[in-house]
Image 1 (cartoon, rainbow, N blue to C red):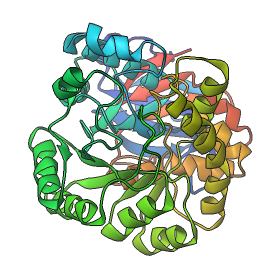
Image 2: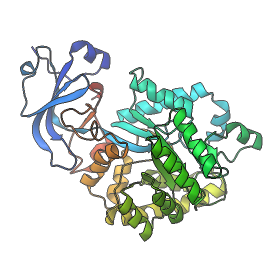
Image 3: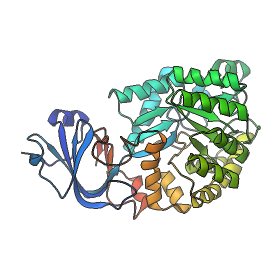
Image 4: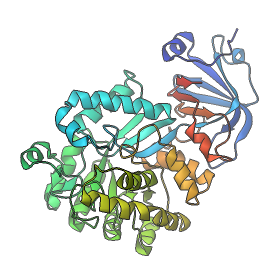
Length: 426
């Protein structure tokens, strides 16, 4: 006879049964549709194989099917964060950690942050800038089931120009030479090489930095830094090798150059102008707004003293301007994918982005679409992720009440299933 119980151990669950039945009090099959009451999901071998109205008896499905009772919960697809940095968190000891912590330390720390992210309900992330060998090992270890964490789409180190955002800065010259990545490039043909290098060693996606950045310890600003021909060469090379391109971009000139070159997403997009919006809509590229990053650096600039003068000035200016520019893009109908830039903010607090988006005027439904359907589309996995339809991977979360009515519900995810295995329950 089926046992009605919430599973607390991945190992225990695996030993019980190869078929699971979830009773969902309220089920959001797709964020583009209204939720359904009293539904049952049937899961086998990590995938959803069926959905039925009402609470079905597991014995009808299989003799050894086990029941997961979420009959008083709101159930939906796992959330997706399209911009994280799992190898660290912004703070006063970052420079010290760079020289004091080994590559192995970095990997272990990133595993810790990955687990926090998964437990927050984010079952898929794009890591857009980390030490390549370690982030690829983390990605692969999670995929093999060796450790717990979200599915990772990893960029490794950014393709960036010498002295630009994404290159190393703010430390002694001999250390700069030591830490400069092989994906730093100059000129279109060298940037072609850097792109191929990143893909050769494991990049799932290419991250470029077409403008300066807030956290570069330099006063070179946030304007365009990667030249038009360099951006174009990276995009053409990446696309030819089956990889999408994400462009860090603050200033409108850098945003527009990247969109004209055919990038697949703009990260931050802080100063998108009317031309940017036209290019977004023409190309179908996504905006990943990362409002949490702006909110975090403004607060840190005002309340801490570890930032250099150059970083503090950029943080206050850019961070304060991000909301207004996000509102303009959203109202204009630009496609938006959910992303936090966690690593600037604390890992595990990823749902705070939803609060900021909602406060800025984005509807709860559009936020959920951005964090599920749009995320899946951006990483090219719409056939396997983003909704709770039959045939898709069983990445499932639950909470006490509907985030469509109260977006703050996303801050307290009390059930997480990753690829058909329960990893968290309260």
